[in-house]
Length: 237
Image 1 (spheres, rainbow, N blue to C red):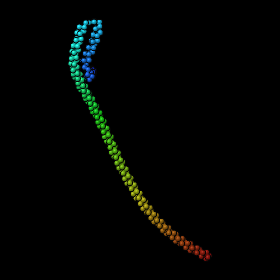
Image 2: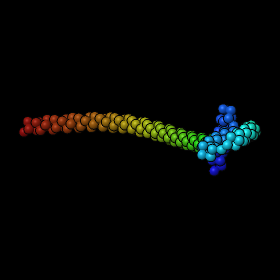
Image 3: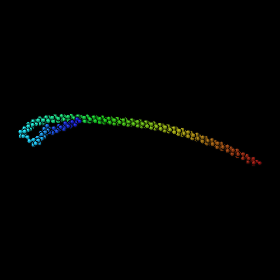
Image 4: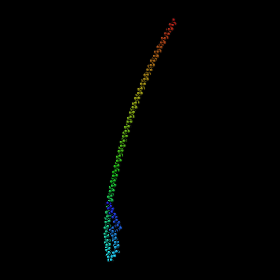
C-alpha cells in the first residue's frame, strides 16, 4: 500500500515536472480550461438573450478584469506549483534513494549472510574431509605397521625353523656319522675276529691233517709190519 502511494506521488511529480519543462503551469492549465468552458458557454447563450450594447461593454470590461486577476492568480499559482513540484520531486527522490539504499543494504546483508553460511558449510566440509583423510591415513599406517609386524614375526619364525632344521640335520648327520663309524669299527672288529678264527681254524686243520697223516703213516707202518709178519709166518709153514 505504501509502495502504491509512493508510485502515485512519483506519477504526480513526473506530470508536474513535464508541465514545468514545457513552460505550462498545472494551475494555469486548469484555469485556462475553466475560462475556455465559460467563454464557450457565454458565446452559446449570447444569441438567445440579445443584450444591449451597454451590457456587452460591461461584460467586456468585467471579462478583462477577470482575465487580469486570472493572469495574476495563474502567475502566483505557477510559482506555487513550481515550488510544490520541486519539493515533491525532491521528497520523492529522497524517499526513493532512501528506499533503494535500504533495499541495497538488505540485499547486501542477505548476500553476506548467504556467503557466511556457504563459507561455514565449505569450512565444515573441508574439516570433515580432512578428518576422513586423517582417519584413512591413520588406518593405513596401522595396517602397514600390522603387516610389517606379521612379516617380521613370519621371518623370525622361518629363521627359527631353518635354524632348527639345520640343527636337526647336523644332529642327524653327526648321529649317522657316529653310527657309520661304529658300524665300520664293528665290521673291522668282526673281520679281524673272522680272520683270527679262520687262521685258528686253518692252524687247527693243518694240525689235524698233520696228526692224521702221522696216524695214517703209523697205521700204514703198522699194517706193513703186520703184513710182513704174516708173510714170514706163511713162508715158514
